[in-house]
Length: 129
Image 1 (tube, rainbow, N blue to C red):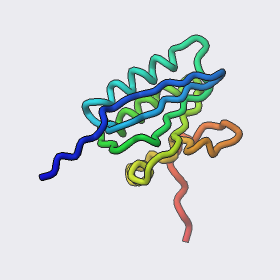
Image 2 (image 1 turned 90 degrees about the horizontal axis):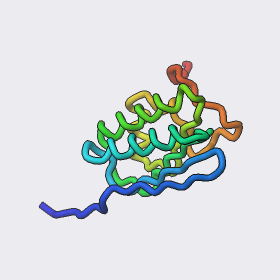
Image 3 (image 1 turned 60 degrees about the vertical axis):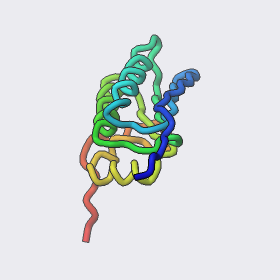
């Protein structure tokens, strides 16, 4: 068995007027998901609260079920205040996980929503035909 060394999980925070960006580097798993949730909650509790919370996933190597749970907890924290939650640079494995679990519609990907409207909380549309 090979010993694959992954860098430790780190979070870099960048605040700009109206927005906070959290850059995730490493594995988002059971051991690290609480750190992400706590940091996101602290950012959302700031005065004034950001209008947009960006999770930059460009350095994310892995996301297990605890990581998915963390993303859902963060979404739950952004919803009441109308904060837009964006996932930037989501790796293919994360996009696939969001699709398979049926939660992709909860997140704005790569700032694609130019109007800043929230992703709908309803189920994704069912393809016809």
